[in-house]
Length: 167
Image 1 (cartoon, rainbow, N blue to C red):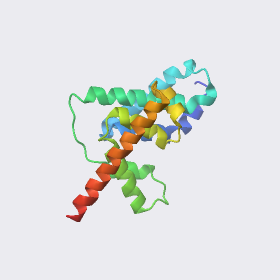
Image 2: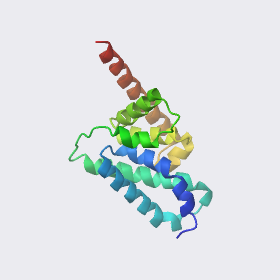
Image 3: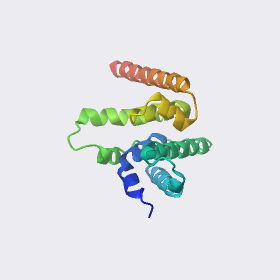
Image 4: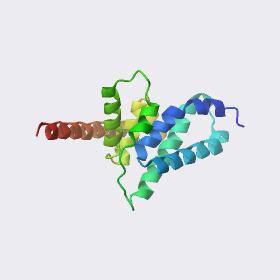
């Protein structure tokens, strides 16, 4: 076993959130998670900066997630949101309203193009523009543009849902 693997295991929640952002079908989500973990395992020997392990594994997860979305675009299938799966990731102290917001966010993220989804999800994990740019191979300015556009789309979705609820 690689000496960094125990540390990788502590990043499971971040990896799981990344996978959930790309796949809503529970079976395919589990499969994608396995692919991510295998790719991380195979790539650990290539890691040059062990103190940058989290960005390294998330880059792998987001690259595989983006590839997964591109390949599945040929045969898209809508799957109902799996509340039980996401509730298992929620803290026990999380309120019903917080769980509903989390559910809405995962569903809304799934509507975004991958080019917007990736930087926004990485920002939600706490990375700054430069770190995201390094992970995605784009400029920090481009990261800012994509995050801004992603947020605007999410705001529009939220407004649209609010308007629909009032009707």
